[in-house]
Image 1 (cartoon, rainbow, N blue to C red):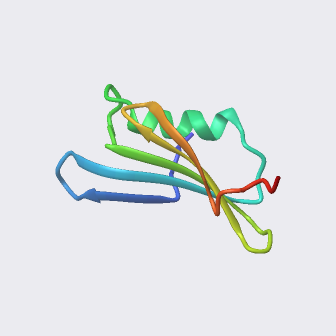
Image 2: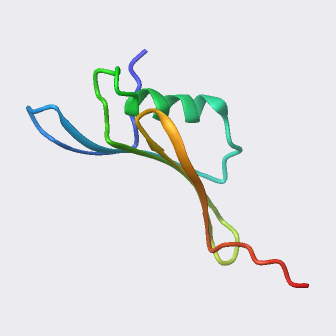
Length: 88
């Protein structure tokens, strides 16, 4: 089937693809979502986006944003905002 990301940033008609994003709300993480962004950012892919972000927006109070940053088909880092701080 045809796989379409939620958000893309690119230059039309030239092969300069900057960012691809997949955004979910209150969704459990899945390997399928990760693989989708990896494929869009892989150097050997026909799209070869420079950067990819998988973002999960959790409807907590305040909202929490959890995500994964990709470059060249690899995970660069996981992130969470606001960062959870344990109180000792």
